[in-house]
Amino acid sequence: EQLIKINGIGKETALFLSLLPDIFAKYNASKNVGAILLDDSRKCVRYFREVDRVGENETFYVFCLNAKKELIKRIKFNSNFSSIINFPISWFTEKIVSIPTKAIIVMHSHPSGNCNPTDADVDATSKLIQASMTLGIKFEDHIIVADRSYYSFSNSGILKSLKEKVKNMGFEDPILDE
Image (cartoon, rainbow, N blue to C red):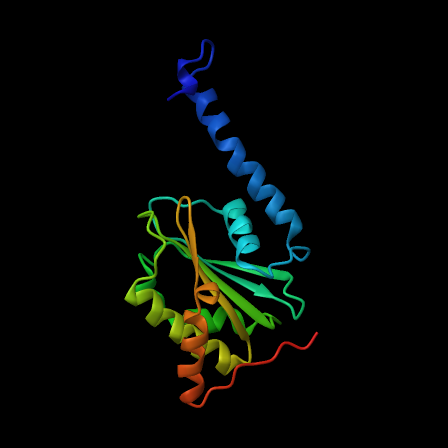
């Protein structure tokens, strides 16, 4: 709307110009897969914002990493999952099992602007930890991204306590061998 106010810019040109940042970010992100080091939450959030943006619907990604925590593949879950509550663990395991990944980072957006985890987020994270441990894959973090902030389960310490609960159920946390 602000672009249209500029003399000589019509609706189509304004739309095109407004899409350019997303187009360039997605192009750059697609070129760099395999060379991106995701070893802390800030880097993960920066990369998430390059490939996606917080919109009206939740978006879900799994970043598949090698033992050096370099991105080897990113998987965007279909937008038909209206929230993490509807996230099927079986779909997750089917996608991950075919990738030679050593570790994963799960990320999703909260369009509400509140990045604090819900009870459903915590429950889903616990199930994802169990699934990844079953597959022999290290679960590095679950990060929730909002417009101007983010929440890292690892940084907050919740991930450690969730992993302990899962270990007490008989699961083992894989060790990354470089």
